[in-house]
Image (cartoon, rainbow, N blue to C red; front, side, top):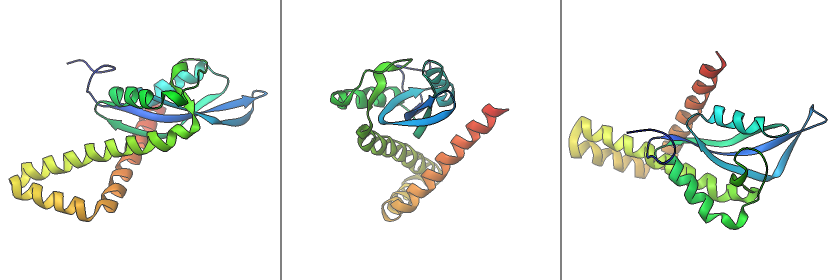
Length: 167
């Protein structure tokens, strides 16, 4: 099975903003617009988009989930009324900034569901149904702690990718 767009293989889905470089050295964030995109490597994708714009694109939220391509397309369809034609690579993926109020919670929920699935799968593998029931009860009772745990794992994954790319 191939990976990439049009598959259920995990990819990065992100919300990003454009930082305009005024006079080539004064960074001014374009706080009116946000980009919702997907890529196998979020750093490479944002570098590619940045090369076609004045300034650069910086992510404000990133998650790695299966079906990211389909989730991105779904968000684009649901937020079509907020779409703003922009320029550069990915010019059809820019929206008014309010899109983040919808996109970020949807992405976070998809990531939490993905992580929860793995917790339940591992618990089931270790102790069959009893382990899965205990894990599900723990998830229901400690959902805030679970989200903190998921968030810490997400930060570690992003930092790992940044460190590996910088070498």
